[in-house]
Length: 343
Length: 284
Image 1: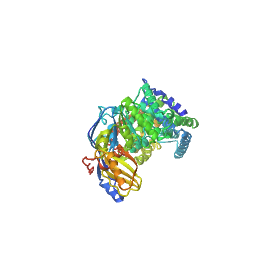
Image 2: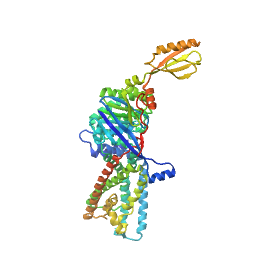
Image 3: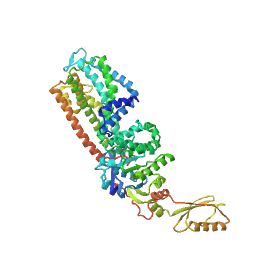
Image 4: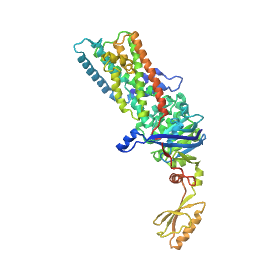
């Protein structure tokens, strides 16, 4: 469905220079900088997959989407979407893809939603009957019958996002790119959007590439996760693999009856301590929670203290990915920092 | 909404074929609706045209003074020229440059390019819809009232009317392509505001809009006659008042308009390709 093969996109940007002197100097001798927004990226997506595409700000996620829509020309490598080369066959490719940018809208500000949809339907020259059927289906799934005659400027963010989803799906594309579609949405609206995407994938087999900073959304929606950093793929694995491989760290939260002065923890590390509450991170491959609790109980008894309450925190993609952003993939070769070259 | 009825009637001439949604029909309607969103301003538009017409007619009367004619053009012709020019200029002016410029600058062009419709064509349809709305709602009613009140001398020959309308269409295309080219320079300049502001002045002088070409020294006029700018407004209105006579003169003028439209269309296609080729959509 999607095939990226050693795909790179480098931008040459001009440094503006600081202060009047710097600016004048740059005017005569401009200084360029090479930014490797997407750097030697290779992965495949098969039909019907939902892939979470993650990475910190500026990692190259949006650039990848632009390469997939054919708006950007690759610097090197190749990209193929549903058998087409997007930048060469942009128009043909357009029929295969739907795109939603959470921070932009493709709807017309002053027009009622229904009219925006009609304009988009016309751009794809949809047969009227099919257009009506698809529209009715999407509108009822997203429960937006009541807002169709509202101009976009009067819609709430959640309603607008639903509108943008419909706009992206009117031509029934087999592929959907979502660039932060849940940004700024409240819990209810977010829930509707995620449920809708799951239904779309299950019923129509739509392949989805989902970009978000909200990792709990990704965890809920995406069985496969690709993490990008500094333009390079640093991790490409299923949700389960990530949990199994990097999620050995659990946390035991122990509340003692009295204040804890000094605590000897036989296994794991104390990551946080507050009055009579202690958070202990431990590796479930090295020690079972049962043994750890037993050892803590004995220690507490010896010190004349007792355990009041215990709970275990399971690992989440959220915390794992957060750690990967900060420290890289454990056990992997450090990603080179030399991504910015003087050019 | 009464506006959408006007839009439907006006766009009704282009009925979609074969049960598919038609690009032309729907986008023209979009342009009409965009313009109609500002229909509260109609009255102020009418008033401002009327004021402009009165001011310019007084100015021309003063310039002619006691003279019957200047450079072979009578006062009556000159007054008709300026009146028709003001009416025509009004519906030719659209938001194209601002819209395309901001789309390129803000990176929204990424969305527009992911559509199965030519970028230039889709904007042309929108702008044509806008112009159509402004023609129907502003220029035509004002033209009728002015024609009656000022007793404008109208061409009697239907051939002149046909040539005028044909030339007007070519003039609109010329205006569209020049605006589009200016807008496309945003690929390199990021902001074309200054460029755009100077465009109005340049075209009204080089194009002989407010200063008709016959008032220029013959040597200068000769040069300006071959530039594309005169094709926007001067050529159609000059045909209207008979300054360009039906016959070889009109054929040559229309031919030149058509030639420039083709050149500008070709040029804008090339420049668009080059711009998209180097496009750096901001915020990547």
